[in-house]
Image (cartoon, rainbow, N blue to C red; front, side, top):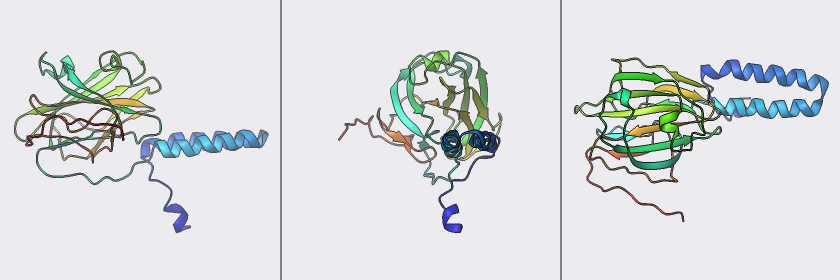
Length: 230
């Protein structure tokens, strides 16, 4: 039994109601048609997998900015931050990460600091992989004030399937890099805006691990990286 349980992921509390619903529906379907019960069982297993909440080992050296989400880097480009963040209209380097329905959806704080501002904005639900999703889709943006006085903005963005953004932090709250602060259901996007002059250390197509993958180094001098599929 203990060996079996070692393969079962820890599920976040937000997921238990959904897992229970999937399981009950699957059991009812199985009473009428075993084939439908199998389909329901597979969907229940997917639901468990979607709401998994693994621990992560976060690099703690001062100056490192880690990924706020699991997923694929789909864009690294200059972009004007959300106006509700008060960072002005000068483009900053934006790293966009797409979360599929198979990725871990727990979002994490990218660096040590204090949440200075949270701003929710309603919007559409276009495909989160599209560039316009950053501007058009429903989003919740956070401004984190770093120990050196600089600030970074990171944004939870709803997607084509996602219909609920959850944020568990509050303005004025201090955080350590890698701490959980929210999630998005079910498939979405996370944007992060680097401070002016900070080079990104990831490239388009790279996979990120929330709370672990280093996106940038505030104290580094390495130029923006390039990458190639090998």
